[in-house]
Length: 215
Image 1 (tube, rainbow, N blue to C red):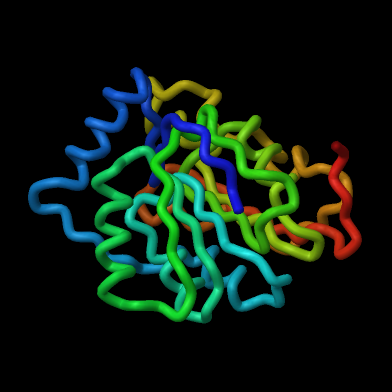
Image 2 (cartoon, rainbow, N blue to C red):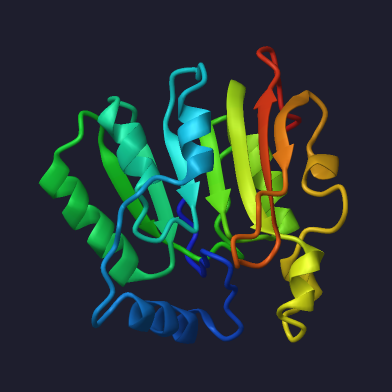
């Protein structure tokens, strides 16, 4: 199962800029009041879960109130959601109790600047709307042999719409595929239509069936 170091998470197309405590308050505020979670699984998660996977859990990083882990759990697969916001994972926990999926749903409140999943521990690692190259490297190593890595993040083209956003939060040309460790095969690499949203890129890649990550 994934590790449990504490810290910060972000999702959609936003990153936090302050301490973990202030970031958590900001995200909790977003999920309070009139917010209603749709619990729709991400399209990338749907594509990944439709493909063959080894035995093992699904890990959703920067999950928010994720519908992706609920989709995975509905098939009986253990699923883990990681997010800083206790409001977000509280909503997800309540929804999981209501739906009673066939597989267990575990929520982890953690900071993605410090959270690192264990190597070779997950059948699918998913992250949508958050970018950090160190986390990506750890996530790629967390995939079991034959498993999948699914990622979506903003590209540097998004800086045209959000010029004040730090460039380190965005994928550069060729990323994240160029950052995959040896042994991965890219299945999907695309920039989806903007639909009024900042420019993004999606990646779906499979680890080799006999993959062994360095110690």
